[in-house]
Image 1 (cartoon, helix red, strand yellow):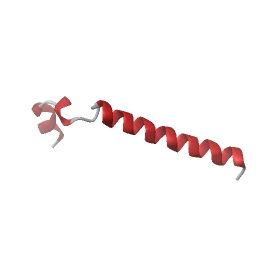
Image 2 (image 1 turned 90 degrees about the horizontal axis):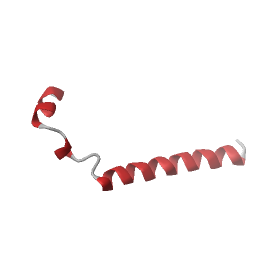
Image 3 (image 1 turned 45 degrees about the vertical axis):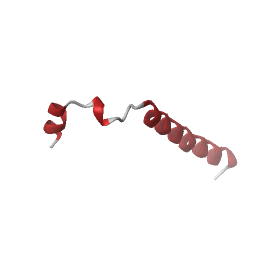
Length: 43
């Protein structure tokens, strides 16, 4: 695999990790965002 392809894959993975960490820090995945009705519908 070429160096460019390896670099693009590494950057893509790094960007995904940064987005996930930002979502956690911003509270986008906070359980309080979901109502009890939505939680019951999911079960």
